[in-house]
Length: 119
Image 1 (cartoon, rainbow, N blue to C red):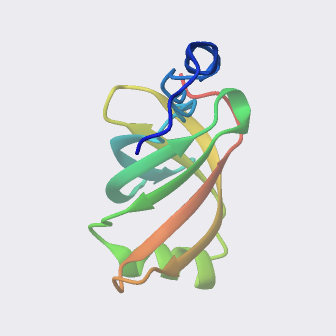
Image 2: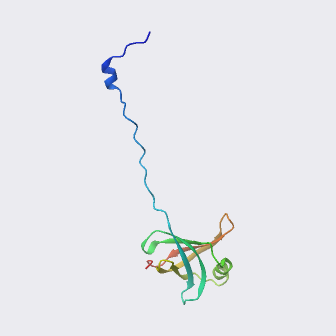
Image 3: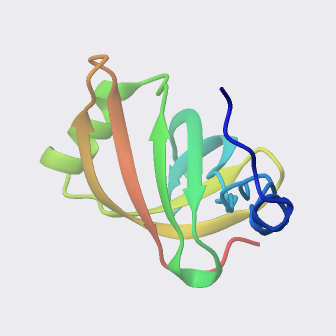
């Protein structure tokens, strides 16, 4: 035998669907074809820049370098830290090289910190 349900108990049941979790979109870093040159205009390297942040506080990582050995040599041997970053969309800014290293895929990257706003 099936027990009878009280009609009032049925009305009291919460039959609504659970709410979907709130999803917040985070901005993905911008990626641009880019070049680095010395502040006096000598071309150094070409690669793919991923830019995070805005204003003068941006940070970037340059990967897929066409001349990775030159960046390392310039950084470690030459002591050159200040460069000019030019993006494929026409913007440019002075930047400081904060480091250069190898990532998991054995690719050399160059890490940058903006010294001025990208214009």
